[in-house]
Image 1: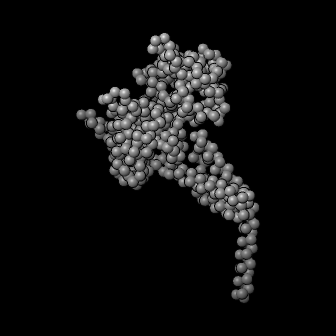
Image 2 (image 1 turned 120 degrees about the vertical axis):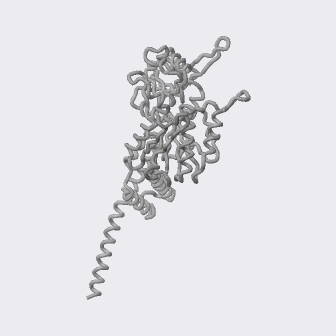
Image 3 (image 1 turned 90 degrees about the vertical axis):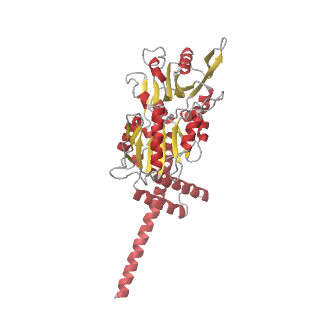
Length: 421
């Protein structure tokens, strides 16, 4: 009787095993195609800065998909006809798994006053990834800092965690306060510190031509490099840094992670009739032109030429503006003199519409008013800027030529890329 039951059990096991094997062989190709499709999609969306984390697979589903795809690669390479194809699939699976791991990292957010709305939005969109702890940025009667970092009381929720610090260096007083908070965080046994500083305000002051002038780009880099270590370098995320060599000024305990806001502009361009990108100088063209190659847009490069005496005039050096809908692209705007001259030249050359985009709207002394409707430099149909400097963009008129592109989702996307170029 026992032998009979054993034989029946064995037969049952063999039958189930055969059935599962047949089912697995039928599904392997589809699963492998699914993994490849998702990896390609993630890579494509990452390259355009458009990936949305809400579409993450559940861990169990991801693990199953990875297991089945790996089995497919090992079972005769059904999806690939040679060893090279199998290796490519394995690399895609590894990249897929690596990206999912990064996207699952959780952060505690500490933010400067000016970026608290961004911090709240990040927590609202992805509550499973981000927790925002509000900080009190107070002052004592004598003007010195009276700061209380959120998340430490009544229970310490910061130590041992990955911390994301949203910084805004819009003036020297605020900058010093935020450096003090960064030091305190790094001395609080955190797992890691990522500083998001969308606008690096001293990027234009990286060299001197006269002894005694302070190169503040170098001094800021020294301060970042001298931050305490939590066991790994502090990651400094910066957008559209004016002089790219500034990243090499950092050393020791801080590493620059450079990113761009151009993907935000490209989203707008795809929904518009703009068919040409112009640059105010050769430097901007060398830096940004390659980012628009996938859109098939014409490129125009302007530049300054010598006029009478010591005067410099903006002229088109390469390209044709006639009949075009144009956007001028640059990294930042101060008073906007060159941007305005470039816009005038393009319109005089026959452009149908001229728009502008800058990553950083510095606009000292409210110089943006000259570009608003009714201003003496109101030559642009649309003026796009990002909210990298919220102290400026928060006061721009809503029903005017200005449109503020939010960096929130771009920062979340770039947080997982660990780019340094």
